[in-house]
Amino acid sequence: MNLTIHWTFLPHTDADASLAFYRDVLGFEVRKDVGADRMRWITVGPADQPGTSIVLTPPEAADLTDDERKVLEQLIAKGGYMLVFAADDLDKTYEQIRGAGADVVQELMDQPYGVRDCAFRDPAGNIVRIQQRD
Image 1 (tube, one colour):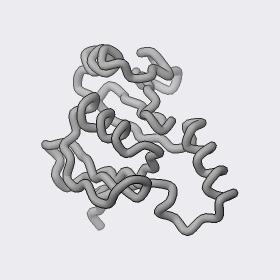
Image 2 (cartoon, helix red, strand yellow; image 1 turned 60 degrees about the vertical axis):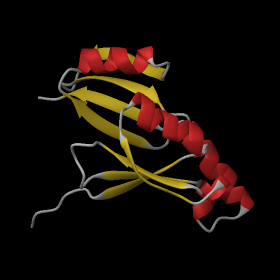
Image 3 (spheres, helix red, strand yellow; image 1 turned 180 degrees about the vertical axis):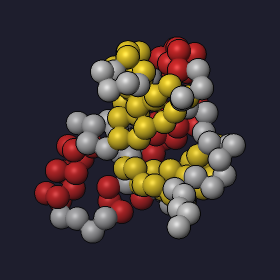
């Protein structure tokens, strides 16, 4: 069996802010931008990996009650969703993202489990962790 990640879904709470973060700060290309207002779905991904995409979706896309939606939005804001990326030059990547004004959750550090990494929060509150590529 040979599986690859094709799409993964990540919630957003502000389409324009999320678009600015993933496109302008992380440098991803926009592959699709559909819908409007609170029902806007944006597909982004690394230009050199056309088969791997992140679909930024609004919480309203799920069939939720108002109370369930509030709980989901609280979970998002607390960093309940996470993406982990790898970078060839973590120090340079960290400085570029921090320099763009991203919310730093964890500065560069060597983890006790053997990786060097850092973490940021996207505009919705999702955690974006970046590790040094081996």
